[in-house]
Image 1 (cartoon, rainbow, N blue to C red):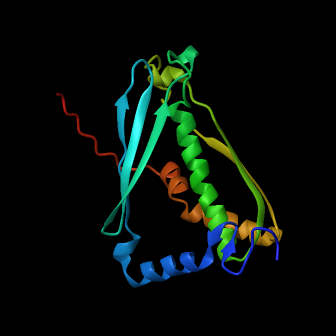
Image 2: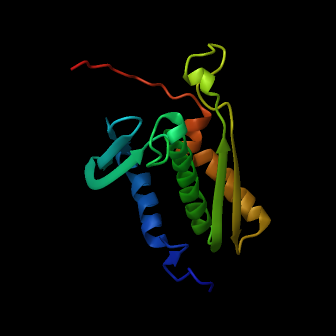
Image 3: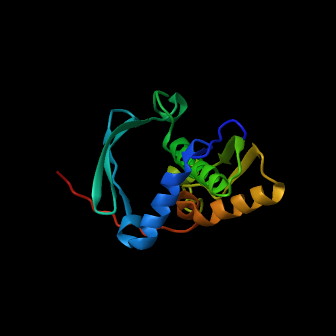
Length: 187
């Protein structure tokens, strides 16, 4: 057995717990519902702080405590004290894919040595700043590369890659429009 592998653990994941979660969700679809809420407050200049205090899994609320700072670099009127929102979005995309590669390899009994994901994107500030109406304010494309090493065959890694692209929530979110339902409350 390779390092990182045991009867119950593979790539750091508890295979029995993973199988149990899959079985429980298969028996009760309510256990498949995962809900998230993030509250973000302005922290001066271009900085904000987001707070995550809980999430829901099925009918259960699970407490947590996370703070996520965002800022812009000095050249974009911020202080450079934290990643900017685009970097955070790309980091969230990469992190979601990473879970998919680790879980996908683990359920296929493929030991991983390393996984790296590098994602690049470019946007045009003329859209964001309303200088040009014909230029969208966001990314037109994101380019990403997954570098994966382990005991799998090229065919196994290709299958895992295809599965990640078809099952990753953030891949789905960024590839397709999401209905946004915003409300403005003036206090």
